[in-house]
Image (cartoon, rainbow, N blue to C red; front, side, top):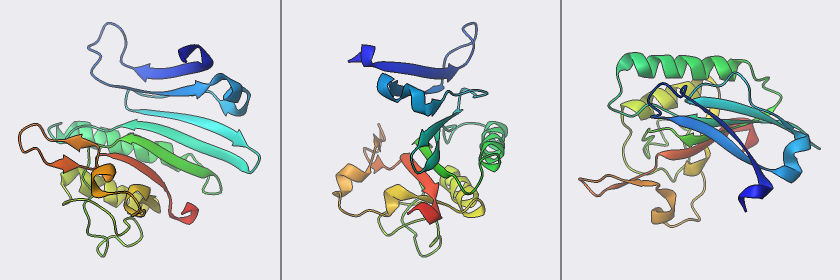
Length: 177
């Protein structure tokens, strides 16, 4: 029920087209444990969760699409890298969202980043994401767990080709797996 949650959202100002935004829905009973989001963008929003085992950093992500300009993609990945740089490596980290990236199934090329259960082939956005994950010692958790059927590992179906893709990802530090 909506009244049991508090919503944190970041997007473009009201006078601009609202093409993208990110946010969190937090159960009200958890509010005393969180550090509310601040300094977010319409594509990256961070929130801290203080748990009995330490701080957990959550990031809500909405990456540019494949058809976005290189400048937009460069800006996004630069901002994401800056946000990641601010989080101490001793703290837990989870990036959650629509990365608009196909990271593929070539786990042998990215053994520290991908598991054995990726889907399809890597695309340009996926290459960018894999490079960032490798540099920041992150891994795409969706590709490490094979219990789900292939249909449950995908999140978007291309309207023309009808092929399914794994675009919504959960990324964490390799040391957390």
